[in-house]
Image (cartoon, rainbow, N blue to C red; front, side, top):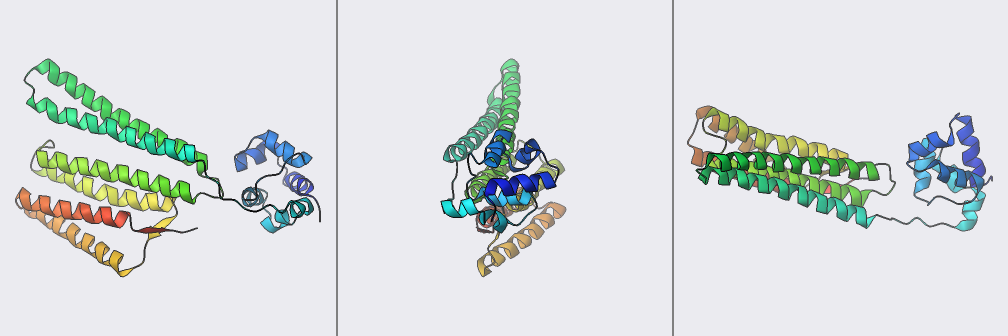
Length: 270
């Protein structure tokens, strides 16, 4: 059996691929590829799956390399805890900015001075947008960091839990805002409330798909999903019939609580 460096070098050349191109595919530097091909170092065992995929070959051909057999490398599931912690902190901080902006928007209604009101409005909008900006940038950086890693369960779970928590927290702010009347009354308020409730449901499905998660297929989840559908029907009926707002609030809170519960009843699939 050939050595590892011979196998990957030969296969890379068969595919007419440069070291830099291979490095970009598996998210390492071209110097790392050079070391592997010169026999100066070896990738961790989990990386063999990524390398095999990039070189369009069976991972068993790499694992069976004579020098890897001699090394008897064991797979180790490693995670960058500092990266995970940074993403958690960044998500929390971004929401705190938006929360502060939301509070300033409410406070402005109790101020009589027009200049101070204007300052509060501008500050509120800036903080909310800045918080969203930090959140989006954090998502992009974190996803790009781990997306091509072989072991990613802990990253996926962190990404989903903190992102869906951010979305649901924003949803709660919207509901509180609607109750306080900051979105006005009538049709305008109903439309905003509808968006606040429906958008998180779609985002939840997207985040689950990105994080390799799925709902638990148990009777409890099925009952909750059925209850959500029923509440959406009631919610829609209330809007169409323009039923008094207190009843609408009750339905909204029941619907929100149901969405929160179902959002955290999932299982990871590899």
